[in-house]
Length: 110
Length: 116
Image 1 (cartoon, rainbow over the protein chains, first blue to last red):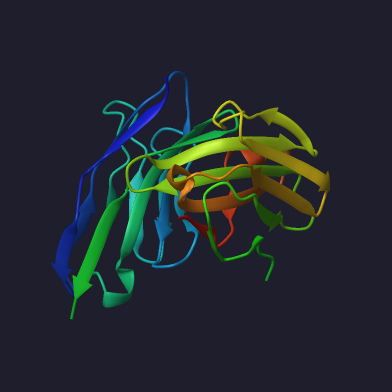
Image 2 (image 1 turned 90 degrees about the vertical axis):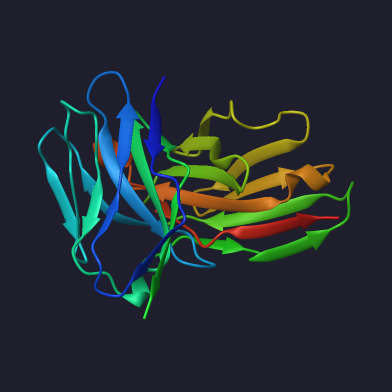
């Protein structure tokens, strides 16, 4: 079946540090890949997506590249801010179902 | 600014009581999803509707949970009777339908349910 494995947290960083959250997937065919972000007390928001191999999704300074050869979709940001503190979920969709990773809690300290 | 809305945002109830959660999908969206989020299980898909028809509720405990869409602007998730293990945050999400619905879902703020 389809599944997503992402780096376990929690991750604590200082402001302006580099952030990487690893994500790998298992799926048949060609899924679409996503990163969702969940701020405290809120629902999930789509952060970025990539729908085919070698696509790069980007938004708010975050980037992730769909790597079919390594079945990965790692999330990166070059300089984090306190406002980036949240839980980040890697996900894939095949047909209508979203399969989520366990989530990685990121805390950015001033 | 179109958003998925959910009511109530918080619900505390006693074991055995009926709980009804409501969701208003984004106008024009024809796919609706119900998820449950817990610390132990993460995010689980409970039910999926397309054009108001239930297409997948395999993730939902059938004996006590039910999901319906009385009309295109309302989706409901009911638990009867509720149990402490149902305590979780329940999210509704909607999608625009067609091919793009396979790619993106828009989430509501969730209903935090506590069953004592």
